[in-house]
Image (cartoon, rainbow, N blue to C red; front, side, top):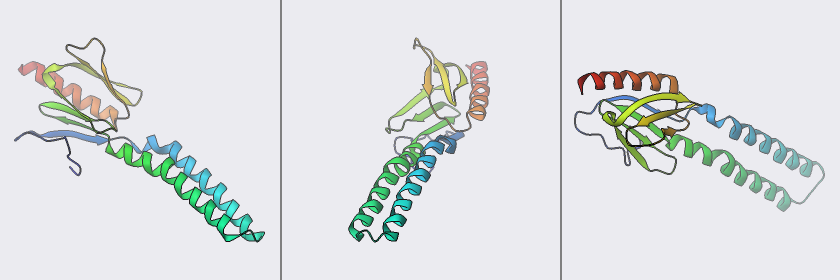
Length: 155
């Protein structure tokens, strides 16, 4: 596990699934980057062809770099930070802000996929907890429900 801040496993705890947000969540930021790149570099080409000052050209390149960082690189870093881990004892979920939820399997009533994420009914909560953008949510749901069935059999 590459980045374990807040995701400490107990001795003997076995990881069954470890996912981050799917890359498909970055489709729109990628399309934005392509449009921004096309528009900015067409402007640079036009400036070069018409003899516009190099300072203005460099300013357009700077605008391109800043918008590329804020509209693509930052969302990429945020989505890669989000993690959802199922172990043999609990579920660990780290949000994009870095906070970690640790839910013991004994507290989970049921789980299902919901709009690309996982929705878990937890004892003591009136509504299900929803974790958006869980990568491979179908596989995660299957592993989690199988583990819950095994856990309820032994509890």
